Image (cartoon, rainbow, N blue to C red; front, top):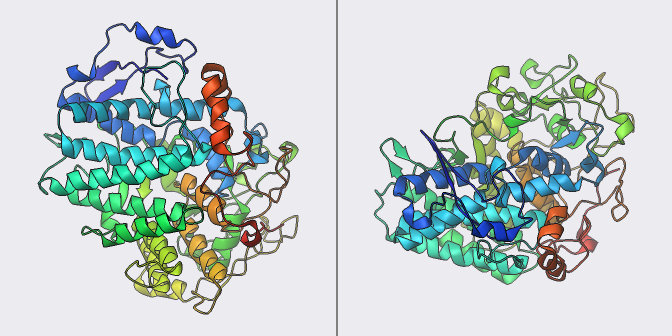
Length: 555
C-alpha cells in the first residue's frame, strides 16, 4: 500500500490520514500520489511525532476491537457469542470483518491506522537522529506487528509504505527473525541513553501512554516481549527460541516482575478513550464461555468477583459459595443464540463496562508480570536457563495475577496455589448440569504436579496463564491455545466451515476480500509463504506442535 500522511490537529490529538480519507482501502493506488495539503515527515515537529506515537500505541492495541473480540475472544474461549448473526462462532466469520481488522491496522483512519502512524514516527525519529524515540518506536513495531502476523501468518511488513502499487507480503519466519533483530537495535540505543531521559517528553510527562517515557521500564518491557516471542517459536525453531529466551533472561534490566511495572496503556492524551473491551460491552453480543465457568468454578478462583458478573441469582465467592458462573458453549447454532440470552449467562466484571454503566476506565493490559512468570515457567520446563524452576515461576505467576486483580490476602493466595481442587462440570442457571451433561474441561489441579509429565505440567502452566490473561488479552490467549492446545476447552457445538470439524481449532484468519481486490498478485503469492490454502485450518509458521501430542477439546 502506498502511504501518504495527513495531519488532523486538535488540542490533544494527532491523526495520520491516508489520501483516501474515509475510504477504507486502496482501490486506486495512483490517487495516493496526488495528495492535498500533505504534511511530510520532515515538516513534523517533536510534539506532532509524540502525538502520532501515542495514537499508534492506543489504536495498535485496539483497532476494530469488536471484530477482534468476535474472533480471538471466541477462539480463545474467553467469551461465547450469543448474537444469532455472528457466524465467527461457527468458524465462518464474514470477510467484511477481516477487512476491518486488517485495514484498521494499516489504513482505515476510523480505526487508527496504527501501522501508518508508527511508520511515520520511525522515519521521522531516524531522520532526526532521535535514538531513544526511535528505539521506543521499534519496540512498539514488534509489539503491534506480532499481533497482526499471529492473526494471518504472512502479512505486509518490510514493504509497508514503500510507495508501490503491489505490496509483497513477508513470511512469518522472516518477520519473527526481524523482530529479534529490531529488539537488539532498540535495546542498544536505550541502554546508551541517559536513564533520566523521558522519551517523547512533554511538559506534563510523555506521549508514551504505557511507561511515561521511562527508559528502564521500557527495557524491562522489551526483554519480556522478547521472551514472549521466543516461547512462541519454541516448537518450530527450538534452538533460536532458547537462544532468545536466555538472552532476555540475561539482560541487565531484567523482566517485568512487579505489578508496578505492568505494561498498561493509559487513556489517550486527550483522555477520551476507554479500554478496548469497554468499547463493546454495552452491546449484548457475548457472554462468558463454559470453559471459563468450568475452570473458575472448580478452582474456586478468588478472581471471580472481579473477572465476572454471575447471573440469575446464583451466589458468588463473595458469599462464600462458589459455582456462581454460568457459561455458554462456543459455537451454538444460530437458532440457539439470541441477544435475549445475555441475562441468562455470566458476563465480564463491572470494571470492563462503559463508564456510564459503572465501568472504571480500566487501562488496556499489554503485558503483566503474571504472564512473564508463566513464560519463564515454560522456559524452565523446557530446560532453558530462566533463573529459577518451573514450579517457582508458576506459583509466582498465580500470585502476581491474583494480587494485581484482587485485594486477596497472602493466605488466600497461598491456599489457591496449594489447592488440589479441579475444574467443575459446567452448570446451567438453575445449578443443574448443562444440557449436554458435559464433563469438566480438564482434570488438572491448581497445585503444581512436580511428578507430572511434560504435557501435564505444560497444561497447568498454560491454563493458569490463560486465566491470568483474561479477559482483555484474548489475542494472546488464542495464540497460546493454538500453539499448545491448552487450555483444552470445549468442542464447539457446530462448525459451519467445511475444513474444520467441531473438535478442531481455528488456526488463523483468512485474508480479507479487499486484500485480493486491491493487492491481488501479492496476496496470492502470500499463500506460498503460508504453505497452505487460505482457510481457517491452515496452521501459521510457529503453530507446529506435533499432532500426536496435541490435545483434543472436550466434547
